Amino acid sequence: MARLISERNVVGIRLLTLEISDGEAFTYIQTLKHTLETLEPKGVEALTGAFVEEVEGMLEDLLSMTDQAEWEDAVAPVLAPAD
Image 1: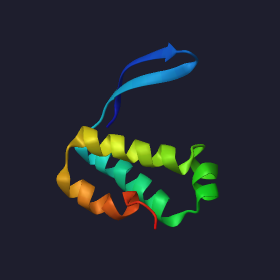
Image 2: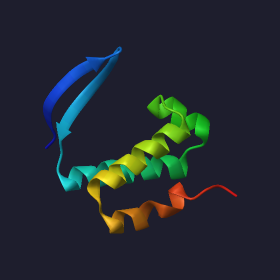
Image 3: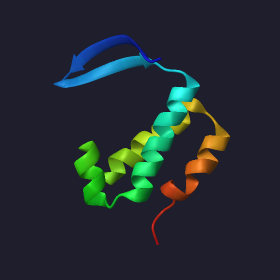
Image 4: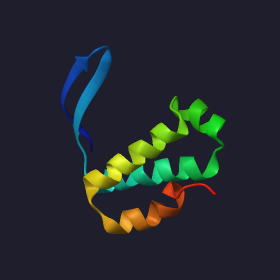
């Protein structure tokens, strides 16, 4: 279960420090992957409020924080540059 460690406001942006399990991180990774794979850019924006590039960045951030090579393999096709 996720736990809020701290929160602060920086220039109107609410920043959270969270503690999550690796299982939760994997769920977030898979959810972002699924969103990017199944929705058109406008759908991603409507669902998340973020541009595709921002969601891809979030996915990459989660992957770098988890340091799990098998997760990177699972999402590699989603992050591959478009032809």
